[in-house]
Image 1 (cartoon, helix red, strand yellow):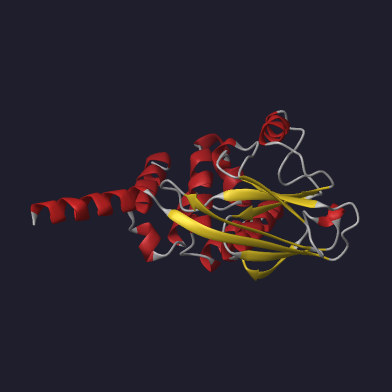
Image 2 (image 1 turned 135 degrees about the horizontal axis):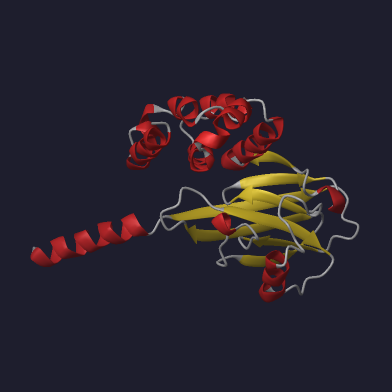
Length: 228
């Protein structure tokens, strides 16, 4: 009986640490001129979302490609990745990492690359030069939200408040409130409030579940400390 209890305890402990997600990323390309291979990687020049765990390549066949895998979030709520298209199929992980680190490749700026969240999704790509603008046609809930975040950031007119309200129970919304709170200080208070809204305004739009979570309570304390 004791041995059984030990096994159960170990199982639950390991389950709490490992948060594996399954993902299937599919792509459909209208014009495959200059496109022979598709890559999926969690490598990035952006340190907060960097991970060297995934670097995958697959040939584009009849205008389609697909990636399947498992990823351990290690306590995070989600993981960003980049899908990019190339003529070459021999780009190595080391070459890609060097280009990211030296800002030769910048996710979010490259025309042949698309920033996504690792999850089940299908993306529709017109051609090589419009990969960045590709549309999510199936699933991709968090990736769609990430796209909306980009638009709210570009708007710079307090649209972030509406975004957080719309996706109040989403980890993407919570992360944005965390980020804005981390940048907030008295010297930039007026400017930040006019662009994003105050941390407290944003926090109040989160769902009760997120606000009362361990991370939520820690975030509220951080906000209170900053606006004393």
